[in-house]
Image (cartoon, rainbow, N blue to C red; front, side):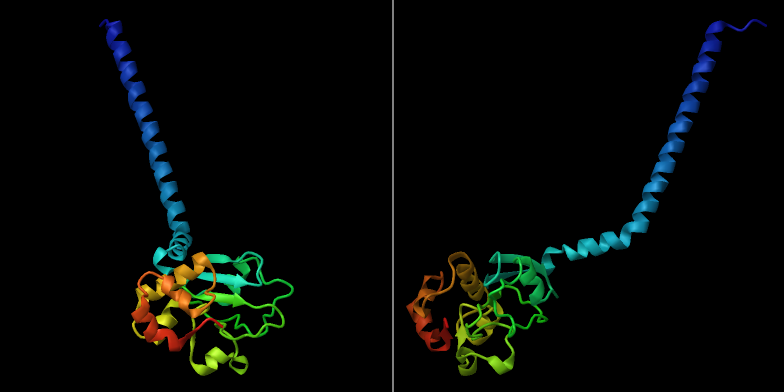
Amino acid sequence: MVIDKRWTVVAVLLVLVVFTAGVKYSDYKNNQEMAEEILLSSSPVVEERLEEEDPEKTIAVYVTGAVKYPGVYRLQEGDRMHQAIELAGGALEEAEVRYLDMARLLVDGETILVPLKGETAEGMPGTNSGHLGSSQRSGLVNINTASAQEMAEKLDGIGPSLAQRIVDYRNNNGMFKNIEEIKNVSGIGDKRFEAIKDKITVR
């Protein structure tokens, strides 16, 4: 029986197509298995990284005073004061850090003031109780150093949102020079100022 050459060519082409498809499927299967293996082996690291970068766990603190790069820095919940100071380039040689509680947990919206040698530690968050300044002993809230949480808790008529505005104003415009300057913050008029003026200080 004579086989038509055309059918022979068709048969050869079919064999080649099937073979090529089989090779590609095998490669795809191997690559998929390799990808799954890599993903599974690295998933704890990936999960940990995602957790570290969770925006809901990010806090912002303002580091100022005797540090190399004063400014607002983003950290994670559970970070401590020494980490914020390190992000700001570290304390200067002329800084006085003896009374700073370097192991204290950070609070979102707070200000960390690193003083120069010879300056008092008054009003600084994290100072040791044996070296409290006059504002802390008198119970006044230092609006230059208090966190948003502290102001919301201790000042009548100042809720979390307004307290955060005070911190934002301070971060953008620098320390308050006097207590009257707090009226520049949106939401604090004469009436609200009268209610808190005897409970706040800038020193």
